[in-house]
Image 1 (cartoon, rainbow, N blue to C red):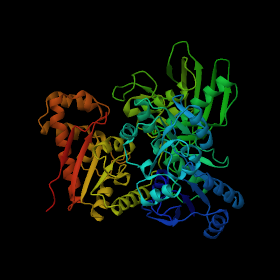
Image 2 (cartoon, rainbow, N blue to C red; image 1 turned 180 degrees about the vertical axis):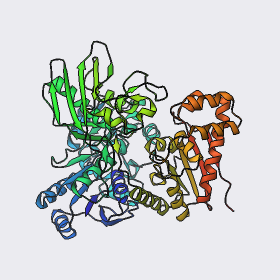
Image 3 (cartoon, helix red, strand yellow; image 1 turned 90 degrees about the vertical axis):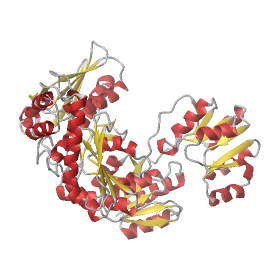
Image 4 (spheres, one colour; image 1 turned 45 degrees about the horizontal axis):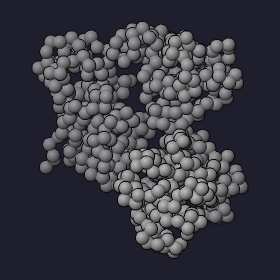
Amino acid sequence: MILILGGTTEGRKAVSTVDETGQPYYYSTKEANQKIDCKNGIRLTGAMDIDTMTSFCREKGIRLIVDAAHPFAELLHQTVAEVASRLSLPVVRYERIYPPRNSEVVWCDSYADAVRRLEDDGITFLLALTGVQTITKLKAYWQKYHCVFRVLDQQSSLELAERQGVDRKNIVFYRPGEEEALLYRVKPQAVLTKESGESGGFSEKLAAAKKMNIPIYAVKRPVLPSTFIVVTGYFGLRKQIERFVPGFFSLRSGYTTGSCATAAAKAALLALLTGSPKKNVTFTLPDDEEMTLPVSETLIEKDAATATVVKDSGDDPDVTNGCKICVTVALGKEPGIRFLQGEGVGKVTLPGLGLEVGGPAINRIPRQMIIHELSSLYDGGLDVTISVPGGEALAARTFNPKLGVVGGISIIGTSGVVMPFSSEAFVEAIRREIEVCRALSPDRLVINSGGKSERFIKKEYPELPDQAFVHYGNFIGETLKIAADLRIPNVTMGIMIGKAVKLAEGFLDTHSKKTVMNKDFLEQVAGESGCTPQASDVVREMTLARELWTRLSVSDKDRLFPALLRLCLHHCMPLLPESHLTILLIDEDGNIPYRLESSHPS
């Protein structure tokens, strides 16, 4: 059993992660006022001291504690550390993402230090954005000087502030998105906040104060117990749950070749710069979440170093599982980072992949990840050579030969993490997510293939909660059946052109193992929709469906793409007889130039 200590945005995210499994767990908050849907969780409220938490964990058979509480909940962190020590339990800290500390902020080690600095700097009129619980800690300041406190707009916060002696006229209430307006209205001499991270709105506070030229003071977040294992997002939490509570997730997740190459590249550069090999290396996923991978081997030479990471695909049946991803980083003569082809990495021979013909098959996202990590460590020129021993033989079991990638595998991955492929488990996870969506009663379910398309489509529905967005992966038909079974009234499906072509032909499972793009079918649709003969030439010559965006004329796109959407709608609507379906076709830049809606069911 897992115990999650929440009450924050991170607590909600932790709940969303563990709810996917259908397994029971406990979710505990100090106060009862946080609104959260724990589909499979047992909700607990009220503070627990060391003895109470120890007894609870022992009685309930807790195997893992997830501390997702506020970063300034120091007493709770200390309590968790002591309980974990007594019971030999692992603790995973779901931490916020923090912007780098910069010189524009006056950083304070504590509230007492903040009071001292404010007085030394002659600040006599302060706006405190530190919350109602910090009023007592700042008493030495506000008893002498003018101080306005911002608190949550709830009766308990107002009463607590007044009980501590703060005049009602010196209290303002929190309103989302009002940072700049509040500063303009109060016109303080300075602002005091705390290092609350991105989810705590720290960057927004800093930007507003900077715009109005108001000094900002910030109390640094407390240091966490050294025994806590820190994660900063969904994937990290899932990996630690897989590690400490085996079987909680039915299948293990893994890492892409792009993530492995990024970790190996960073390890190689660190070894080259320091002369010391690293056993583990931390890197950043495209969504800014930090992950750590072990480094199996490191070889340091005079002007180069090579590091190796062994790829773990989890329970996904990936042909590269267990292979070595080796990266050599050498000091370059030219500025910038240059990617070179090593053994077992393919060479691009055809256009359409978004990569230079003749160059190594290292996709865009892995390149960006590697550049991000290396440029943060070294600003000179670097040559990066990625090798995969045995990669040429592995490539024969992939679609690389058909795509014109010869001599090895591709270094790929858009999210950096491999989610295990299991039809039954995946479809059941989809059902659970849609059930959560339905429980929250939004008017609309938005389904999309994955994280990339979700980021694009969220801009269309900014008012919807995160739970309204569900990934169908390749299981379009199964997802629509579940939506119909749960009587979702409005469904929006975001789709990229590759899957749209397959769906238009009638394939409701678009996995590459089940179907590939049918050029004959696509050419037939182009002809029937009135496209020019040049459109047929493009279809016959292209390698990937995404080339349609750049190689077709505007008039041919305006004929072909709506025709494809009409066919998609034709195949989908029998599965959604009582729902209204909107299909959005997303281009490679995240725009939605084509859309089609079904008629409203009677």
